[in-house]
Every structure is written in C-alpha cells, then in structure tokens.
Length: 285
Image 1 (tube, rainbow, N blue to C red):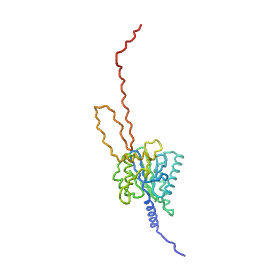
Image 2: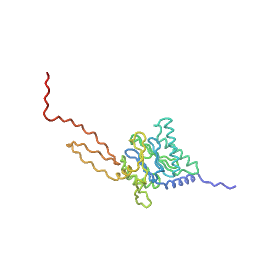
Image 3: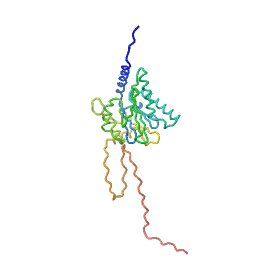
Image 4: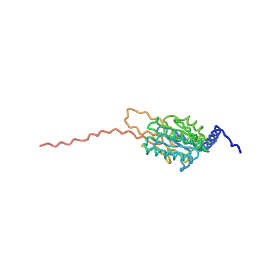
C-alpha cells in the first residue's frame, strides 16, 4: 500500500493563490474611477461582443478581469439574484453591498473547496444620490472584499496603473478629465515603459450616471467617446471677467465632454410705447 502524497493546508492555499494571481495578471486591465457625476469604468477591450463591464441592476454595475467564462458566470448569477430580490421585495432592497457579500461567499467557497480557484477579480459599484453615497467594492479570487474610495485598478499591471491614478486623481473630477486620467493609466502600463496611444476602438467605457432617472448604467461609444477623449486633453480656459456695467447675458458654459449647460432665462423686455400722434378719442353723445 502506497503512502498518499501529503501537502500542508498552508502550502495548498499558497499554490492556489499563486495560480489565480498569475491568471489574473495575464488579463487586460480595468479602471474604475469616481467622478463628479457618478462612477466611470474604463477597460482595455477591443471586442464589442465580450464585455468586461456590464449592468447588474438599476444603479449597480459590474467590472471584471481574468477568465471570461468564469466572471461571466458570476455576472449572470448576480443579475438573477438582483432581479429575484427586487421582484420579491422592493427595488431599493437590491444594494451593491449585498451583492458584494454574495460574491465574496461564492468566491471564498470556490477557493477553498474546488480543485481550481476562479482566476478572476471583480468590482461591484453602486452610484448614490450624492457623491458621499457612492460605493465601490473590490473582490479578489479568494473572496476578500475591500471598500475602495476614489479609484481602483485591476488586472495586468494594476500597481503601475494605481500609481499613475494616485498622482492625478482628485475629488470631483469632470467626466472628460476622469476619462483622460484612466486612459493615461492604461496606456502607461506597457512592458517597454513607453506610453501607448489608445483609441476609442480599443476601449470599453461605461458610466453609472447619477443624473439618469432610474437605470443609471450607460455605455459611451462611437462619436460620444471620441469627443470625450479629445475634450479631456484640453485644459479649461479661465472665464472672462464680468463687467457689472454691462447687462448682456453670458453665453453657455462648456462642460467636460462637449456638452453645454443651458443659459439662464433672459429677462423679459418691457413692451415699447407706441410712437406717433395719438388718434382722437370719439366723442360720446
């Protein structure tokens, strides 16, 4: 009778962790970044059929790196759970924190009980009514959960990208500047150390837009994305000084992304008095 091969639990967990980390590092990176109007997702993904960023529920989105079939199974499971909970109870009962806890339990069970861990790293993000209510949760292959603030980078050269984001990030970034910062971080993560030029065709970009009525998720594609990529590189010009002596209504203020803020309602002009001689009034009998 042969003696079974023994591996200590510590060594087994270490081998599984190394295996999962190597698989995740081979994937293209994803950046999740908070901006003044919501939460931005930017992934290096030339495919238009296989998405790395997707909607889960009304105000919740999902981003992942690693093996596509594994994180797609997680995404589908999250959509089903969110739909069932929202239908059975109330749509407000579906929260990003609840889905993050569910994913953490699932990934932790797979990591400890299955023969092979999932080679995935995911982010569950929820946009709130105000900036303070935004939530970004990062989950790793072993079920660990981290509550991130501001931004998070996953996959590929995540540490290099995070350093680039740390240098340029600030609270309340406009959408154009946020996209420029995220794309700059992805472009800087290269083997040769030289920055690449990433175009809209090589990127998958989406936002959780706080201003939308109910379904907050929106993809940015085509001319809209190209305009944002171009406008983000332009620095804002200082506003011209206002002369209180003039009463002209100022023009619309340019926003990030090329949109324009509507000008305020102009003051109503008083009707002018009629000119010329006044016709004689008819005499009364």
